[in-house]
Image (cartoon, rainbow, N blue to C red; front, side):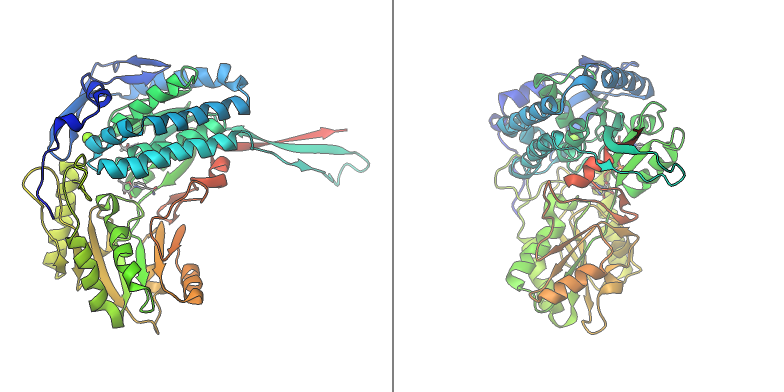
Length: 501
Ligand code: NAP
Ligand code: MG
């Protein structure tokens, strides 16, 4: 691990410096406006704890304004746009994200802490690709035709067909770990299918959502089709409980997911949820260890471990356990920690002081319970919210480090016996978001994939996402699916039309 260095201010693009030089406002009805109550909050750089800029704090009254703007837009000009017009607009946005990739990446890195190199290669690229991918879908949304029989109307003939129509006004509530990507899981598909959107970014990372609003407006999106309300959980709750919001697409914790379900009851709005995880990485003794050791290490370290799909329980076949976990610990220990804007940085700080305290608390509890750290276990440096990559062994399945989502660079490793099988250990959690299986035996790979109750199973890789592959959770990891064709269904509703001929 290298020491922290402060990146030279000259590294910052003038556009980013300019963006941060002013307080940021809400984006409602195509206009930048202050919150009704005039309140603001600060967003900070987690590498230093210093304030980046202030942001308007939207509350229920601001959500009301945003929902009214989104409703007007939904019923206005936007409803007359052809699929090809929506396709072209989304395509322009994808291209704009690519041409402004460095700007988005720096802003994301400053706000979230992640390395700017990763923000550009993963977050911005992925978001751009999502706009391009759903641009293509806009012109390919189809219903079907049905030939009815209607047994109680003998002799009558009917012709029936289905339409896939937008759901209406969509609230998108997203977390801080992948601020732009999580918005891009929802916004492109929502717009491709003809909905209007109110986006509520996390309080820790509001900035790229606001830059995205600028890009969408410049691309020619009509006023009110896309709105951003920055603020805290109460703004999210106002969206979830709003009677004129037709759907909430939420990514975040399981705890808040359950609150969203309660809040949605009033008007029975549609709800899709992408929630937490405690994903296993199952390693058989016949795996290619040269790939599996760094692969499983990055499976839990990627994004400072703040990834809903992080492979935070490594289950290793007993006869290679010591050798394998030692290898993972060495990779973890060699990770270069530093501020996101330093090009040498491989892992940045955690997103906030609160998250730092939470992760540190889990580690000390684990050690107190009797776990042993093969590497890590403490803070890195004395400034910012850096945590050492931590590999824990001697962990019992009753420990909180084994059971609960930590959302930091912390993994627990436990052995399993191949004859007894790995099914019960792999599924020993209320979550079911993702898993990976590392083996060179094809039938073992398929068999284990079938045994694991999770929405995604990767074989010999982890976190290998694609725009076209559906993503979502089993059990308490969520409702519905994002990405791919599956998301088109989540953002549309079917109308059946039956005609008596
Ligand atoms: P969080 O606390 O659940 O917050 C997520 C979003 O919900 C934030 O915008 C938050 O606003 C807002 N919110 C808070 N209270 C609310 C309420 N009562 N009603 C409506 N919205 C409310 O999650 P987080 O701490 O930001 O993110 C970490 C969690 O997200 C982890 O559990 C992780 O597993 C999960 N996650 C899941 C996925 C996935 O795809 N499955 C992806 C990424 C993250 P504030 O920020 O202002 O509190
Ligand atoms: Mg911040």
